[in-house]
Structures are given as structure tokens and as C-alpha cells.
Length: 125
Image 1: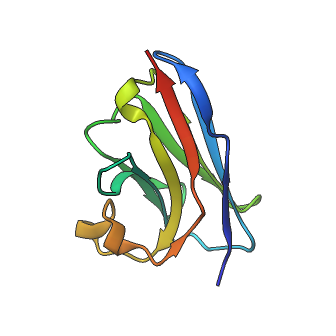
Image 2 (image 1 turned 30 degrees about the vertical axis):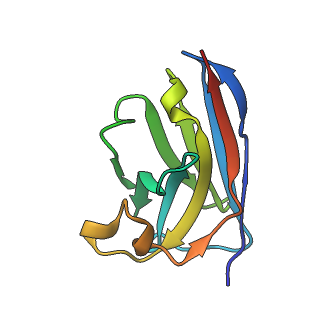
């Protein structure tokens, strides 16, 4: 199974930016959906953004639309999440995931079967 390793998390003030990276151990292919999901303390894991195909069909949750951008560089086997205008409610562990979900499951945990270990993002007031 392809190994996924996230990086780029950290602590930032409200309004700040971070870029998360997820490097895969091998080429995943454009037909594989790649996604970012997050889990805040005491809450269920929720989908943030998903991308598939070339140049990349992306979708976003309403809570991050217009602030976050998902992208992938298959030459580097890397998925990115550019996060701008961060808010305290964005604080969570962010997970990279890969899978072949149906359209209804692109932003749902059940749509993915391969996960990274997660990276913490903390947004302070």
C-alpha cells in the first residue's frame, strides 16, 4: 500500500496562512482521488477538499471554500493544501487520504482507505 506522509502543520495566528504537504511513497495516478480531511478534538473527521484527474477536479467543504486550495504535483508524488485566512475553528489534525470514492463520498471519511498519520494545525486568536 502507498505510504502517505503529511508535513507543514504548526501554529499560526488568526488570518495567517499555512501550506500542508502530503508525499506519497509512489505514484498514485490521476484516477485516484486525493483528499484532505480534518478532525478537531471531540469531533468527527470531516472532509475539507478532494482532487482527482488532470489538471484536477477539486471540491471543497463550504467551511473552507474560498480560503483553501488543494493541488497535486504528480511528478513529485505530492498533494498540497494551501490554507489562507485561517480561523480558530480550523484548528484540527489534518489527514491526507487516498481512495476511489463515489461522488457522494468525496468529502467523507468512508470514501478513503489509505491514510497518512496526520499533522496538527492550531490557529490562535
